[in-house]
Length: 199
Image (cartoon, rainbow, N blue to C red; front, side):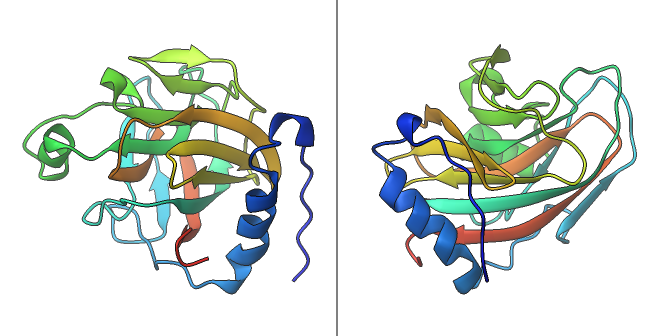
């Protein structure tokens, strides 16, 4: 299978060889068979509001090594919240476990309370550090594919339709749980979740 990748090499000199190996190998390696917290590969969110709803991916299996997550945007409507959708990951700790168990509200968006990082659909920014939006890459919308690469050195990078967006941040620790946060009517699909170790 042929894959077209448009990359600005000047921004990724340290990661260029590995990036090619990772992306070219993705179609050859079986994924984890990952699902959202609703038990399927799809989120069909029907609410349009200013509040956020998280959907965890493989919530019972926090990830302690590098991985590649590919998400497809099947529908994404506009709403009053300027961000609409975030794709990212958060640290797995006692506070998150309480949220997964339904005993405590962890956070209504990725990156709240310094707990992770999210790539924002409607601004192209990165959300982290208690809700701070940082300028980062391209906006994304319906029919786009977003790939998140979390390396074993905890570096986080994103691609939009296989176009490299740059290094978003470096995580403080493993394990993490991938997730999306939504605040608008949308339909999202998990295309694949692949271990870098397997590649």
